[in-house]
Each structure stands twice: as structure tokens, then as C-alpha cells.
Image (tube, each protein chain N blue to C red):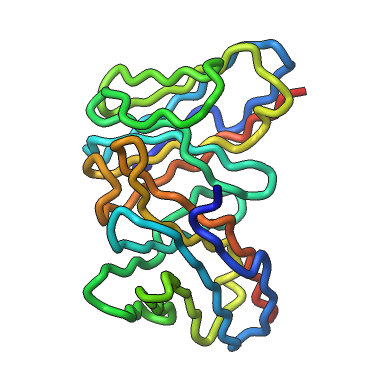
Length: 114
Length: 115
């Protein structure tokens, strides 16, 4: 079953645009929602993460918005640049069988055109 | 310095063969993982070890066997390779067991192609 639903699957914007990627989760072990960024041929790397004490977190041009009641969180990229072109994954912590694991969304391929 | 390294980076082999992928982390982390990323980029956990002890074993064919000789190394051995095993395999590590709010550090991946 898909415990983290991510949309859209792909996104194309012009330089300077504000792409928004959305994620919805079902049940989590606790409130910690990271976004990972993956460039072609590389492993994913943590981009930004939000914890339960805030509804929004901003790091540079990247912002996470978190809506606990709706079980949704989203990534906004301000003033997007061609170098932001990558695949973005949201994730949520799930407890299953007594162990915790990160469950990833299916990814969003972002293309920022010059 | 490479934090999480994997060898080999590319692996091309025939169906039925047995192969291994090695992973090492120099971050001093206690927990290591194996993930599989399929052709659609879907990233799914396979195994997790904490201090050499297996703590997560997803529904993975028993042809896949992880081995952790020490907490800095986690290897993946695959027996009787099948076409469907073709994917990119990522090793990752994190400071503590349980995802908590701990960042996971991923290796560069091993692209396995089974022909």
C-alpha cells in the first residue's frame, strides 16, 4: 500500500518560477518529514526537513509547508534555477513490525528551463 | 573524503549468476541500510542493520542476503540473479537506529543490469 503519495510525477518550470511539490501521508510514527534531492547518477541527499513544532520551515530558497490536520506537506522552491533540476522525494517515518523506517514518495522530476 | 562508498558502481551480469555489492561508511554511524531504486525511480528500503544486527527485513526474496561484518560495512549478496533484479541499489547510513529525525546519508549507488 502506498503510505506516502507524492504529486506531480514531473514538473517543468521556467527559471525564476516557483515549483510546488505535494505529499500526503497516512499514518506516521511521529512528525518528521524530510525532502531528499537526487541528481542523475547520484544518491539522494537530504535537502530540508520539518519537525512538528512548526508549520513552515525555510532554508534559503526552499520552504516546507506542513498541514498536520490534512496530513499533507509540500515543498516550494523560490526563484528556481536550472541547477535545481533533479528528482525530489518526500518521506515519512513509519513504524512497522516494531521497527521504524522511512517511506519515500514516488518522486517528482523537476526540470527548470533557462 | 567519501562518507558512504559502494563498489562496484556498475555491475552487468547474466541471469543465474551470484554477485555481491559492498558498502562502507566512515561517518561512525550505527545504522546502515540497503535501498532499491527501480526504473521508475521508486526508492524502497530492503534491509536495515544497527550495530551489525538486522532490524529491518522487508519482503525481499531470500536470494538477497545482507551481511554486516562490522558497523562500518554492510554488504549485499544476491544469488541466482533474475532480470527483475536490475535496478540501482543504494547503501545509506544514519547515526542511530530508528529514523527519528536523523538524516540518512546515501552512497552513490550501484547500477545492476541483469541480461
